[in-house]
Image (cartoon, rainbow, N blue to C red; front, top):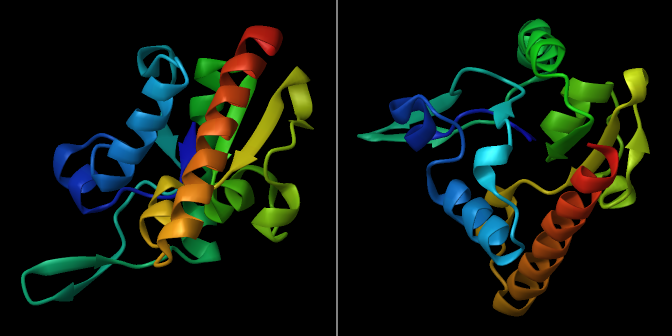
Amino acid sequence: IVGEQPGDFEDLAGRPFVGPAGKVFDQALDETDVDRQSLYVTNAVKHFKYEARGKRRIHQRPNAGEVETCRWWLTREIELVQPKLIVAMGATAVFSLTGMKEKLSNIRGKPLPMCEGRTLFITVHPSYLLRIPDEQRKTEELVRFRDDMRTVGKLSSVVG
């Protein structure tokens, strides 16, 4: 699983997906019987980019240069872990893994072949779900995200 970058909670804990987005991620995994312990979870960018606002650290999206700078690290993780299935959560992860800047909605939910016999599955980043202001749309997107995680579970048993 490849996310974007650490958030404030992740930066402080030194582990990916432990903050609010991590809770959404964990809940979706629990509801779809995907065992987080069986996953290698990382981020495309390894540092927390933020803007200080008083005592708060507000997330800032990493730019292409920052993604490029960290790509060697993600590539090395893939070499070490040797996954058959890679899940890109969000546009930054997709860009880091493929160089593609395509609209996420056009490529979400479709298994794509990668080099070395790997499969790439693309979904949204859980933090996106937290930012949807319309409750009905948020509920619909949460259902889609759970469906994506269910597909990840099925794919992992097929390609793994």
